[in-house]
Image (tube, rainbow over all chains, first blue to last red; front, side):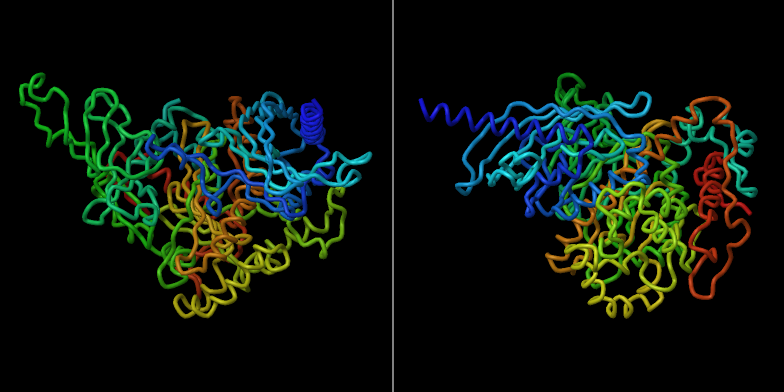
Length: 182
Length: 455
């Protein structure tokens, strides 16, 4: 019974963390979002090719190949800094986004402090008069437990994103840019 | 509207630097482009390093036509329409792979890597053995030629050879393709994105629009600038004008533009030093790795290409008419790509990260990460906004009837003591765009198998 309660508490903690992250992104609080990422974070989204069925499993570009995102904290910092600049025309006026996160699956990670967390996402973007983009995909995160008080406001969420691998379910990116985080 | 000779001449008044918005939105004009521009010009197909073994293939487009490109048993590269001769279905729906046969899923007609029809179900019973399979191979793209790893194709029997078509453009392309022994290769993976905008918007931009970089990409350049150089807070508001202004100033250093009568262009390069790489080492770890690599290979490049090319026309954008684009050594990465038209209102931009084959693995790895951050990341964002906002504004009849201003640097281009071909004396101007549209007009108004260059 205690084990079941512990698992439930862990799940609630992870869900709360991922919902907080979505809220920060949708509220354009990118500087705060950056504090949810570990200093050694790798934020990566491979491209998705159409392959013959016998080449199944080779659709995603490999590590070290061309990617949609292949960022460390420095380059994510550049993207965040760009978001805040008045000359970032793609986000002025700002887009409206809504991140929906679901299908959360929690598994043990490599170390005692880390968990392997998978989640599905649907991100809706509405921009200017009538521009609409819809992105669906899956995230493979490594979440690292940290002391409360590290990251975020008001005591901190207790987790940092140490690694995120994003499967974006598109071959040709159908939006005119990816000035968004998943 | 009709796209006859006289009306097109009214829409593209290149001598005066005037181009009508109609050519970016009119469906009749676009249909004429698919007939007259893409099948005849040398269209980019593939980098040879993507097809290492016989049977390796990629699928792509020449204009609106789907094309299958495959390495042959004799080592050559063949291109054919990706459309079954029986009912037209695409015989290959994968982006890339390796195969010995392409079987049409509709009725099973099967073709080998050269496009020969090698199997027809019901051949004996249905056709009574009367079908001449040798006459029903996939429709070939008759001419495929390569320049230093880049394979192009044309349907025109009268087009000049690829090397003649490139002309002096090859001298500039060598800055990208011939830096080191062993040439270049592309990293795995291709970045594909659908843009809302007419294909000529990006073609003319890579041919000649160095002008936009300082403004459109001000935020990207500011965001990437070493913080030590400008200690503004991360999300400073208002914009740290100092950083944006410095980038604009950097883009205005002494330089040149190159334009070629076939419609090619080099958008702008700097004559004093490597453009935009001055601060490369200070930016971040990957950019520093690339900066060290450029320094370490400078002498070899100068030895192969001469000092003016080792120092000059890098850090720039270029276009091979109509849709092959490249960025040479911009913020730590080089990009080659192609802009496929998708109707008059959209294009698809496909890009690969190009590296020297002889570069060490850690340098290639750094370059491909630089490639993801810029251009695919920070630069794309604001380019996409420009193109879609142009396209949206031109939906109204009065807006599209406007003549747009392409007059910067009118009359300044000519021969240069150092750089070959027709060269403008400034790194920012619009001569390549005027030449692009002059050549486009010739394609659009000529019914011949090859549009002659006139005057």
